[in-house]
Length: 159
Image 1 (cartoon, rainbow, N blue to C red):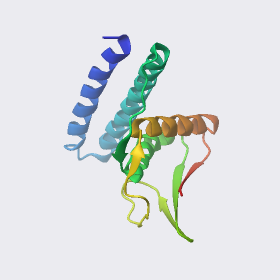
Image 2: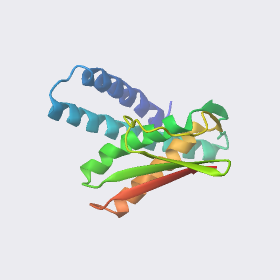
Image 3: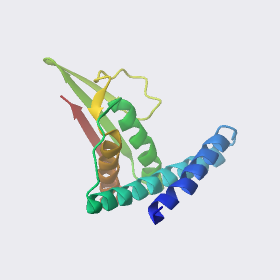
Image 4: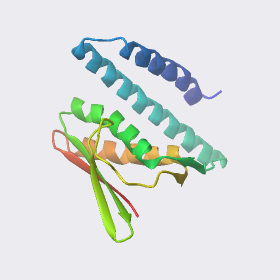
C-alpha cells in the first residue's frame, strides 16, 4: 500500500460520516458548514486520485476506463463540489450546458443539482468518467483560483 492509497480510506470514511450527519442536521448554518467540509474532502480525494494516476503513469500501468455513465450527473457532481469551494472564495460559479441535436440547439442553465429546467443531453456516454471529472475539477479550480472574488462561468457543449 502506498501513501496515497492510505489517504483514501480515512477520507472516504470521513466523507461517509459527514454525509450521514448532514441528513440529521436541521440548523441551516451548521448544515452549510458540513456541506463545505464535504466539498473540501471531495477535493482532497480528487488530489489523492491525481497523485495515484501520476504514479500509475510513471509505472507504465495507467489505463483508461471505458464504461457507460451519465454525463449530466457527472457534471452536476463536479459543480456541486466546486460550488461550495467558490462560495468560500466569495466567487459565483455558474454553469451552462448545451446540446446540439440535429439542427436545433437545446439550452438549459444548470445552476445546481436542484435545477428543474429540462436538459436534453445524451443519457449515456462511454468513456472514463473519473478522468472526465478530474479534468473538469482541475480546470474549474484553476479558473476559481485565477479569478478570486469574481464570477466564473463554465460552458459545456455536447455535440
